[in-house]
Image (tube, rainbow, N blue to C red; front, side, top):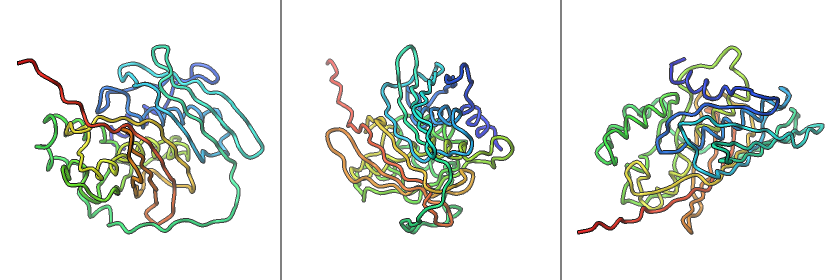
Length: 299
C-alpha cells in the first residue's frame, strides 16, 4: 500500500466523539473547497458505523449545501431514522463552522437472494493498455490555467490509478463530442486486514465517483473544465445505488454520459462495472456548469 492510499484511508477513518457524532479531517483539494467525493464518502462512513455489520449500503442520496472549508475538520451527526427487519435508514448532516455543508440519506439492507438481471457491460479496452495519469496529464500541461495544476491533480489523485479511455475534456477544447466518457479506476494498492470491509470498498468508490462524472457534460460543449479556466462548476447533488459486491482495489469501469444540460446545470449518469462485466453500481449527479463571467478592467 502506498503512502497516498494510506492517507486516503486515514481520511475515511473518522473519530467517534459521541454515540452518533463523528469528526473527520479534511485536506486541500483541487479547488478552494472540500472535494465533494470526500465529504460524501466520510458521511457514508459515519452512517455505516451505526449500522449492524450484516447490512450493507445499497443506496445514498445527497445534497451539497455549502462549500466546505478544506482547512477545518467536519463534524458528522447521524440520525437513526429506522431499523427495520430488512432495511436500516440513516440521515447524516455534515457541519463546519456551525453551518450544514452537506446532507446525506443512506439505506442499508440485510443480504437476501432475489431476481437477477443487468445491462451488459459496454466495450472498453484493457485498462493496462491505457496511459497512467503520470503519462497522460503532462501532455496537456500547456493548456492548463497554471503550470502547477498538473502537479496538483496528480497529487490529489495519487491514491487512485485512474485511466481515461478517450481524451479527457481538457484534451478536446473547442471540439464538442458525444456526451459520454469512460475511465478505469482502482486503488493504488491492495486492501487487507481489518480495513478490508465491504463498507470501505463502497466508500472508496463513492469518493472516486465524484471525480469525473461531469466530464460528459463538458465534452458536449467542447469545454475543458476548471483546470483550463473555461468553466466554473460544483456538484449540487449526488445519488448512488450499489447493486453487487465489488472491490475498489480491483479494476472498475466507470461508464458516464450526460442526457441534458440547461439553466446553468448539467446532469450526468454513470455505471460502474467490475472487470468481469458485473454491474456494481449506478450513479446520478447534477452539477453547476457555468462559463466564467468576463471581468472588466479599468483603462
